[in-house]
Image (cartoon, rainbow, N blue to C red; front, side, top):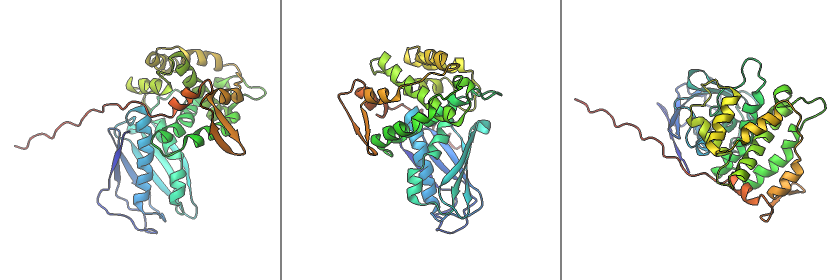
Length: 320
């Protein structure tokens, strides 16, 4: 698995209740250096806890995509007085990738450990902007981050497989088409944007693995898109995304699924899909049937992929 290091610049640990330091810090992961800035304000937790939270999220993204998506992204952490938790995350493509996120002053270590939003926002850096002015493809970007986030966290051991599949079984029905649905490109509701998009990517993952006898999956398609330059700083058409992703897996799964779901309300039998994957939910608990038809595919989805050899930094120039 990829690992990342922390470099705190110009300061030691910040004690609880102290005003957040203005000096930036650097978090290094997957060949990238993430500049972390703190807006003025207070946190009950030490600054080291916040940097570890950023590091864990970056590490999950680097693991899934083989490297961090952009080399020198920036992050602004904004404290919010009188509350706890992580909220209001937004990621932009300008200036090499920029994420802004809010953290409540009273946020606990457990809330940071359970947080999904930092990972979700960093995942956005690994996908080109396909929304355009009409935002008709916004579901593709948000659904991608919604689907990959828990898988990436599971691959570095920060989320159990039971939690991943239990949450999917609980939440994905929100993405099924409702009355009047006109397909993913034409139904910009919250449920269809986030969870309808996630259903698209789940189906893609399963179908790629079926077509390749589990040798490749969505992770290969996403790495192929990234290696072709498709990160958040670039504007791509949907057609280019699916073409490059399909080329990386040697299938036509993405193109076929997009053609089927872009303008038509396609209902996915999620209960049957969970059965075939061997996901069993009962009384809030999750167990796995390893004899199910797609059990090996389920296991492969959350198993870390082969590591990628990252380029080594150039040696420093000699001093004359």
